[in-house]
Image (tube, rainbow, N blue to C red):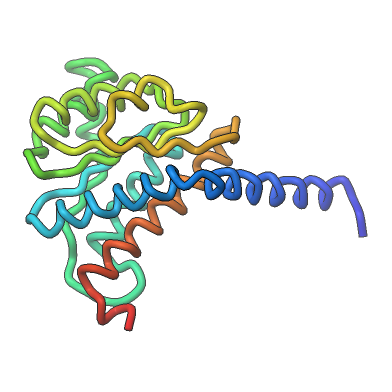
Length: 199
């Protein structure tokens, strides 16, 4: 059976596969994910906080990342310290008082400390409020990881660990790989912290 809908579905799956294959074809990408996992492990091992932020779908990914730590990923284990900057009252308060570019930066300033880690998610790498969060994070000694696309934008050179999705030109394909990176990072950290869960 071949219909316009079926053809479009197949083409989309092939495009998603090609995006993943492009990422895997360069060892630097998987090495960056391993550095992300090592940094997240070091943060949690040292009693630090994992923070995350992004806009739109990237905020959804930031929230998903945080809840996997405080809740459960695959098997039961103790809760781990993570927070996504997504509370509407905080965001609208800060936006109203300081401007939208400051919504994440103020929260980094409030919660972050040296030894913590910020996961900054932007499919363009140029989101002004995410860039500002990274600036503040660097000022107070918070390690920064950027999940990026479209060449990485300004954030590529601003974060400690840039992870840029290659080849994809649309936010949906970029975000699909971002969530894979987040899940794989969580698994890698859990394997070190809770090896019995993977026995």
